[in-house]
Image (cartoon, rainbow, N blue to C red):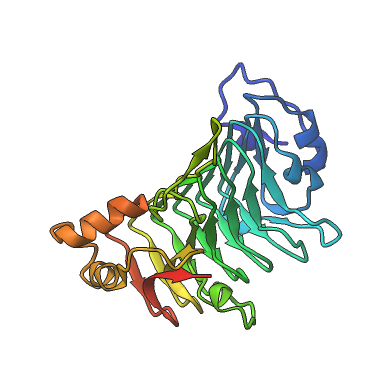
Length: 284
């Protein structure tokens, strides 16, 4: 370690130097920052992020490479209230689960490259994701997949060349850049929920997504897909397609109403050259 490496830190910063990323992650607690310098790393403990920490690369993101271990099912799994990954490249090799899975809490990805080999970024029910100034590519399914009751903010990202999975399942073949999964009794489907003997069926809201200044292109499915597992849904494909083609025209009252129903807010996104189209609601 040299003085040049730590010149950006305050004079009272407590430093611990580790030669192994796994050891560094195992040694940190909520409030700590793990600083990673250019090189190639592996760390099984990235699948066990339960503390509120920052993992930050120093230098160009392309020079700080973290690869998954093929013997493990998971790569990056976040369960803490607030985890932040900055200035890194995540290279997925052989893992089965998503390159990043947000099981609970809030995960932020800032200025990162995610090169997927399996599935992309998955945000599970009740979890939240923020991705800014990042690139997601190569996923076998959607680049970003949102489950019912999840929340995501995507700003200034490139999501491209996803859904490389060969399948006869029509619902999976539609996945591409971003996929929102709505359950059968979500608020979007507008189905009635009956209560019997003071026991109510649990209804999860549709995912909530805000997209601003993203470039979504070259995906084998749609740029953005909304998966509705029932045929009782509102047909809004034409309005959605019109909004994408016109650059998210906020003056279109129909489109605005559709976006509100979907918990989907889109501004100044460039969605183009996706194999099946730009935006679509599909049924499983």
